[in-house]
Image 1: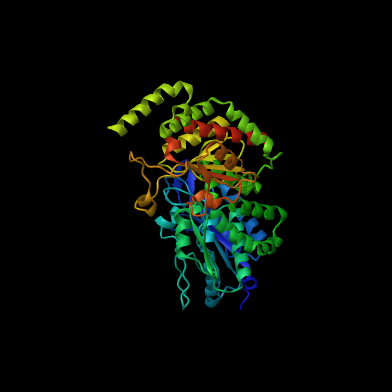
Image 2 (image 1 turned 120 degrees about the vertical axis):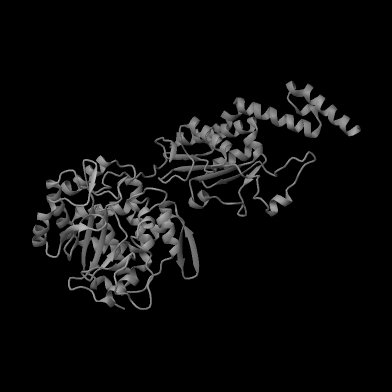
Amino acid sequence: MVNLGSEVNSIGWEIEFPIIKKGVFVSWNPDLRKFHDMFAKQFKGSNLYEDATPCAEYASAVNDNYMDLLEESREVFKQMMEKIPNAIFFSGGIPRHRSTFAGHIQIGNKRGLTNKRIYEVCRTLQGSQSFMELMSQNFKSGRNADERAVRRDYFHFYTPGKSYKTERTYDCYTWNEHQTVENRIPPSTGFYHMLTLAVLEKAWLALYKGKLTMDMPDNWKQATIKGPNGVYYIATPDELFKVDYTTYVNFFLNKLEPFIKEETKTLSPDARSKVDKYIDVLRRTPLSNIMAGKSIMEAKKMAKEMVFKGKSFVDDVKIASIKIPKGAFGATNVANVISSINKSKERKEFQRFRNFIMAVSRKDASLANPEDIEIIHRIIAKKKLKEVI
Amino acid sequence: MSDMISDLPIYVCAPHHDEDLTQYIGYKIAEATGVNYANMVPVDNPILVVEIGGIWDRPAKGSREERREERSDDGERSSPVDMIIEDKTKTKPFLTLLTLFFGNSREIKDSDFKTEMSGKFDSNYVRVELSNKIRYNAQMSNMFIKIMIEIINELKSVL
């Protein structure tokens, strides 16, 4: 069995970024043209161009380590954002504009993978599609958890076939012109989010070592339509479990944990802590729940802080921890409750009602409260009349 | 998501959207105790979730339970118990005190129906399913609300 974890040792990504300037969406800015040649020289193999999406797109060089890729991305976008200030940002989407911000992670090696290897990588990643979709979700609009999956011909559930495809497709995993495997499930273009997903993808490969892994179309459907509210199946050799988002996601994150630790060894302490924070957040909720409340101005600010200050989108997210109770609820507390209820007017009214019902059903006026005895007599008398008649 | 936000991660939930009266009961409890009220599953880390349901004595249409239902002489539906309680807390104060004051109630059995929330929480969770008698009768619902308020307030005092 091929250890794809070691053979797949390069990483790059594409970042699609529509430009919104003074509320107007544009897919290209002429000022970006001069950057194309500059970046191509500085980062060999990179490409800045106008994509058909429509949006501007920066395809990074194929790097052999995460930190080089991070630094390249920050450098490139620093220069672009200085030239076109406040115009480029990285949230998952924006209302009233067709195009969304999206990234595509590519993994491979610098020589390029053979078609056969690409296929093997895709087969190994097959089982990660629903999980990766949930990890990537950053934008919610409309009724579905991932509107992009249902309204655009963007990416489809990948099903491994007997013969491997060589044509590029709209599957979740496909090949790229650099002969790498491209993950087309679009996350936000937040660098640290994409870094986290790249780490997860590589960790998956290292865990499953070239084996075919299986995912279910049902899980995929739940993930794209319901997202964190979906119900997911986890298959074990002899049982099928129906679980929620948190259980499903943590099931895989826990399996990947040792491989994630291995992958993040090459990261700087700061980058590693950001990846850890992302995983902590995504264990509990998709990024879309965090980004959903952000306004355009907030998204712009977050993008600037990411590029210029190295701040991730989830740095400020606080994860509440359970407060450990100071004391225990014991017999004294139970006694306090009983005493309080016994003295209450609700108890008196409840008791009166209960006594009333009992007196009527047992035809015994002495069971009722004194104030109700007269009416009980009348009810009992009427009942007796009914019986006689 | 939550209608009321408080600092303490205790939630009273009445998630069934067609159960207005049950939701009202849940809301009154939350309002009086100052805890959170939600009409769906809380996604943050709650220290206690109290789910209130109101469909205990209304079996599914066409079910065996519906056909076997007892009816009194007046044609009134009679349910064998007024409420069922599922108390997954350590000391089970809700089960203890509700069965004390509502003698005609019992702990949930494995054969009783499950809700989405009851499957989600292994601990720090309470579910109370109320019969129509409790929901529609002012004295009974007020008594239920009072007991729940006292327990939750007493719980808050130990946190």
